[in-house]
Image (cartoon, rainbow, N blue to C red; front, side):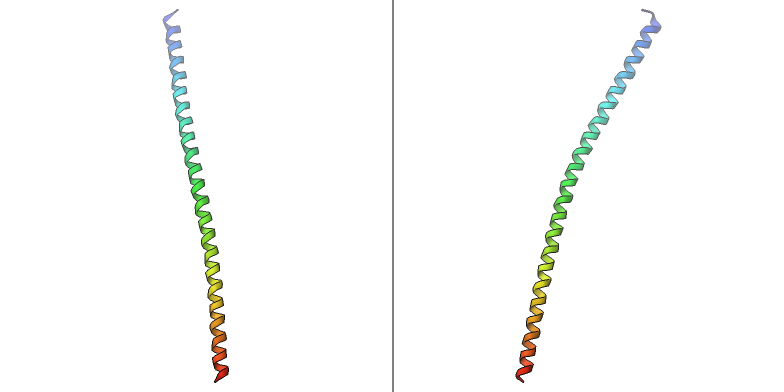
Length: 83
């Protein structure tokens, strides 16, 4: 085999090895990002459900406050009616 052919073969092998390493690194980064995205998705869903529960609790509290205010108004009206 001629020295130029041998050098060409080594250069080609080096390029292929470099490409393979680059591909493997990119594949590893994609996999790591995919795991990170899945984790963030779970956290967003968790926070979203907590927000929903918080909104429901606020509505319940507002409803209770409205009932209390109505009760106080009824008591005031009753007291005024007795005077």
